[in-house]
Image 1 (cartoon, each protein chain N blue to C red):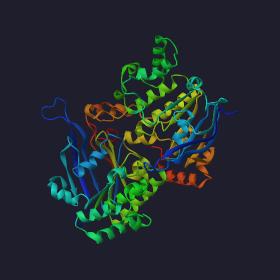
Image 2 (tube, one colour):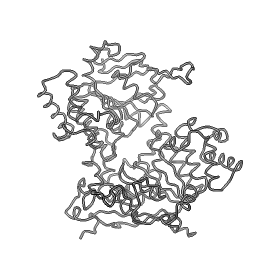
Image 3 (tube, rainbow over the protein chains, first blue to last red):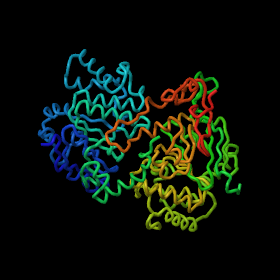
Image 4 (cartoon, chains in turn purple, brown):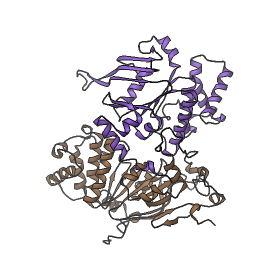
Length: 267
Length: 330
């Protein structure tokens, strides 16, 4: 039994072309299946509109899937009643792409990180404050950070707050949707290193959703390539990127390959 | 001016400031601080830097389109020998679009949603008195063909929303080269596009350089794009150019610790290896240190770096850096 088992995931959206027109159905995710082993980093790659973010959001039930099954440690997540789902949400958390818009600007960094603990009624106020201090330290922010607001932080620091929030409930499964693509190049490496450290330290199972093949190849053991709502190829990262089998993967790899001759350069 | 060896664009000591009036307590922020570079005929120069480094404001300053309260406070900009900062607004209007073309990051916002793309390309020709009426429309179709838009006569009648992002970017490129400008300024022209489309647009820009004999100022944050298309690169940090040189040379043996750090921080050939991150974040332009702006994050920092700003040091032909590592310390 794999730690994460996704089978036949479908998500359709209605689109109405004209006010009185018959709505048409868009299959944003069209029968997606994959498994992730415990402690593994799995990459879901593809271009904009391919359905990778919708897939990730379905797993956390931030959008309701139309059909399919998702088992976490063997337990079916889709169709769980609200109370059970709430309990399970502690086990799976998400890091969002844009640390600017995914943090509430009216809450301090401390309150943002603490919120999950409050919602799940974990610990006394003193214990929670201690846990927040621990988490901020873990992601490389100083203790004073707890009382500051998101706007007072740089983009990289905000993403650290987002990561601390995601880790507050000690999740086993972390979904990171383009965690560094909104960051300046010179701070991307810091956040990539942080993610690798945390994954090792806590044995996290990580689903990385990204368009940047260079990043995915660096972080992931296995990858799935999505195109128009479907997975067109799955395999070990080395194999998929060295010898892509599907024509779409080949196009994607060759487009990015031409764009990355700098990787072999040692200053 | 007709000398092929004379640079098409010459920028000297360009300085653009934002904010703070005479009575203002805070000093103005220098978004562009003494920037100098040349672009030769037919050359592609990449102006590379992160957000806030001043690369886009530099591009806007060249054509005097800096939005207020920004203003150019010093420097000189010459296009084919013509002093752009000395022209009056009417003369400058004639230059923009005819001698200098533009390609912006987001083609959807750069195109007018209520006109067909053919009309928008034709309009450029009309405004600059190159062609009118049916001749302009026919020339527009030829230009759409030149940027490899399939079935250009049909597509000319499409509105921007009917085209994909990549096709819209091709339309913008057609409009930019319509008057056969000497220089095209492309500001992150592929950032909004997917990787497969990005590669096509970059290839198109390089072939347009040959076909239309133009020079290109390419603004980018991505070292991979520099590697793919640029002849030379100028790296900006905190409003200043810290390194200039042949693209190959800069990527293979970067001189400035910022350029070195940036290239070293990219994921390399060993999956899962710890990346060599640059500590800290880009500085606040309103509170720059008196010396080198990169000093607080620099692994090579020494006392001279905090005392004064390093001057440009030529290390090899055409390759220079503003860093005391390479000399120039008092």
